[in-house]
Length: 244
Image (cartoon, rainbow, N blue to C red; front, side, top):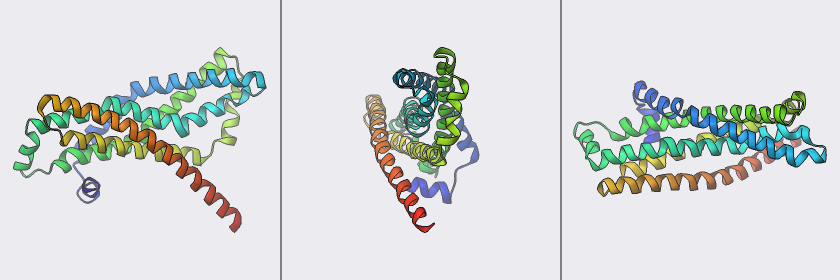
């Protein structure tokens, strides 16, 4: 909570935020691209295999896009960022903790939360949704390539259902999940890092624990967010119908 308060009342220097955005976002693009592309390919292959003999092959593109936007895009992106960024962040802060660098910052009247944590918090909250959008795009491209060029599905059959059945709710559901996952990853990784004890061995334990906890909380959070978002959509849809 103190980090959130500092982020809004005493935001850190833009240069610190920019550096973290580059580390969290730009440097994660390759692994996110590979993850999204391969996931889209697998989804398309499985969807076409299951649906083609039922005469529903044209739903392949819709299934790939829905799955990537609402579920797999946010979750898998969060997993990749946890493994690449969260672990490194926890190890870096843990090393600073056990070598008393954080205490040195306090002795120089520098607030460690504002200098070390707040830039990471802001950057993570911004970059996770953007990385998720990129992952979804790569997933759709991967699904398109497999469906059209491997299974010979018509490009129109893949793309035409998307504008009709993909809604703004699907997009914002994925973005809300990505934002929450970004906050979760940064919060857990930074907390485990700055509370590290026990020297070098403690840094290793803290890093492992932070990754495991992040994965677990992301999976549980994804389930809870899915239920909450779907129920909210149903509630407001019914409310609008009654008013109209």
